[in-house]
Image (tube, rainbow, N blue to C red; front, top):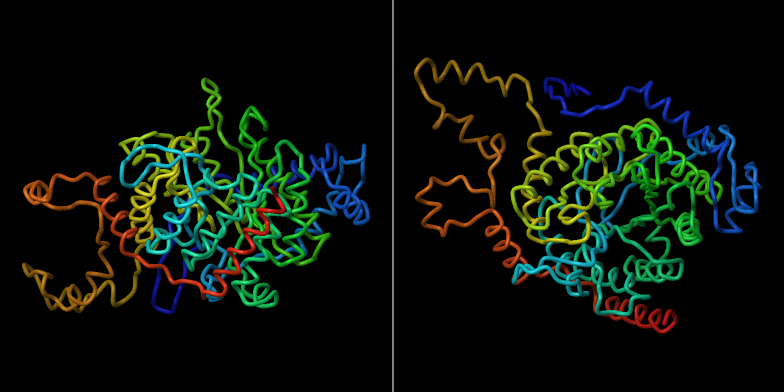
Length: 485
């Protein structure tokens, strides 16, 4: 969309895959799925609520929804979400083509930023990730980025949240194992915010919740959706049918299924609290048919990144997307290629939330070094998306006339005043001449990223919570640990 700001003209570069008419056909397919096939809801309360709202209940937990019911839910739901930081200042506006980046959630393995070895994750890895994210300029939100194996498994979700909220002020995207875990995280969030009303007015957390493809909504997913809707916790509902496995092999069919699963959740959310917003996320994933391993970087996945945003725009809902990942096991040429491809696809589509930045090995391993390299790539993308401003000042005929034929612009006022703004400058990407690069140790991009990670971890001190609040969070985690043992 071109923007006319009086005499300032610019255009945001954007990718597009399908036409509006094609999205309409996919959406109509989703409506037909919900009417003819229905969805399983493994919650008596949810089934009863949907029955009262006008759905047809078949075989106890299969619910069929008329198209009018779905369209009424779309008409009543919110179209934007505003997230605050931990200090309750609004920082993320999930609407339009606003794009924000962050890491992914629980990976069982990580690349140690000091030894370079792949190892199992610990709680301290969540602390490190939050500390790094707190400092990186182009990473907007935090996720756990590690699955802590050194805490009780049943209560790891609360340990993850505690580690994040104590080590960054940035918004938190989190997971909860079940309703009990979600209640504990909500309790901690209210303590940080200073009360339920303060939290509801300025939520700084966002729940990752997902159905089980195809067309199944588990007890845990439904209970978390309903509780979050009641409490004012923003939610992203993320169907992820895999092509040819948990979903049709075609992208069009898999997207119809994705939308059907999301829309079923949306109808339930509106039955709980009309006007609430349920962020659209997920989309088909690609399973390698030779290995049966999920391929993050397949071309079908890249198409899916763009389609997620387009589908969200068609529905009028903010979107949860992904990017900045690799299937590689090392930070090598493959990793650089795949991270750049996926970040560009997600950003040029205009996805609102782009997570999984820094993921490796099909999402099994996290890397703080790769996250830092991606931070630099995001900075480049941000400059690209700013595009070219065209106005009287930027064309600068007066300056061109002043310099004249055969002159130079190195000392011109326009260059001196604006070169830092108009020309992007790297921080860890190398542009030195060979001799300078050699004198500085012939370091690779990974070497420089590792240096930056270590410097941040050793010197950056995140803004701390008040001691009383911090102690309260620790006590909440301990209490739930006893109750969930």
